[in-house]
Image 1 (cartoon, rainbow, N blue to C red):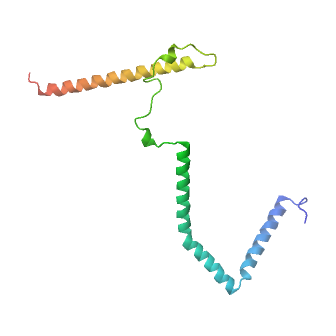
Image 2 (image 1 turned 30 degrees about the horizontal axis):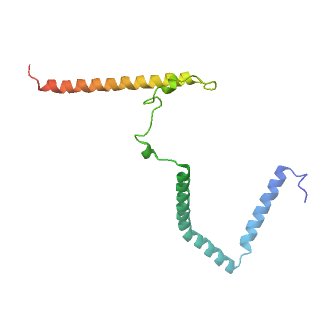
Amino acid sequence: MSLEGESIGDTLSRWGGNLTRNTSAAFTDLRPKDYIRLVIIVGTYSLIRPWLVKLGQKLQTKAHENDAAETGEISANELRGKIEIPGVGDSDEDEEEEAKPGDWGRNARVRQRKFVREALQKEEDRLRDEQADESDKEIEQFLVD
């Protein structure tokens, strides 16, 4: 049987013919013993499958936990309150250092840090002013003209 001269269409039609012939022959040649065996196999699989899925789920969960422990990943809840904003609270030591030959973008990083510091300072001042205004308004309610 040579496949060199066959086209893709010929090959697919031959495979289709083999599939239909073998499938129909598989069920016509079954004896009662074979039917019973087939029913037992399918029934056992359908009864055991939920347990197999749960077992696989447990094994996969354990594998994910081990991977997370190995890589040192932390959850979002562990990060709350621990995120540091670049340039906030940093000392200005790196701004005073001399530029190194391969240190591209240093000036941009310094500008960004300064911008973040100034923006945070402005926001803190605005919030402080709002709180002071609110407390003054509350006090004015109780004052009599």
